[in-house]
Length: 192
Image 1: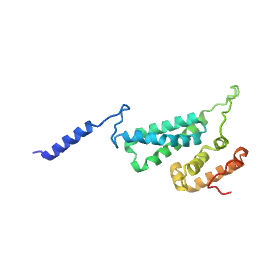
Image 2: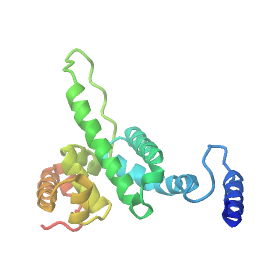
Image 3: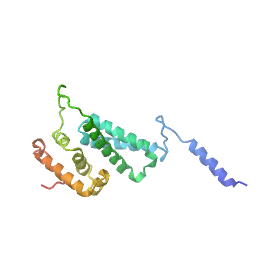
Image 4: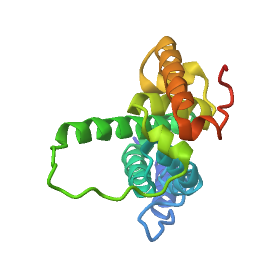
């Protein structure tokens, strides 16, 4: 004989689940069911684009990178622990950027017959950052732009804290050597 109290509670819970409001974008407005993703994405977008812009050096590419990162996060949203969302999204952004950089490097073909594209005018700090290797730039952006510690940066990049220190030191040395950057910008937190 079935237990009547559990049947009644399961019927009530199924009614509340089916009666959940769903927005025009198809995500429900109930926390834990996707609605919190829309709020998270709206809140995170400006910072994500800023970080991506520092990584890529190009605003349009940065917006594409941020959108691809949020798209990836949305597909895995239910499996991401809520206390690790910021870490997951930041790591996804950096990994996606480094992967794009590797693919771009492999697919570039020498084309001496094509005319040079005029270089867009960019702030000297951004120009100096784009001259660094992708990993050096990622370390500097995460350490000094995002304010993360060595351990957090190492965890995001999947390397040791010693590698982070080395990449940061070499990146800062390259920035100091850049004449357009060295005289105008002080790098906070760096040893002189």
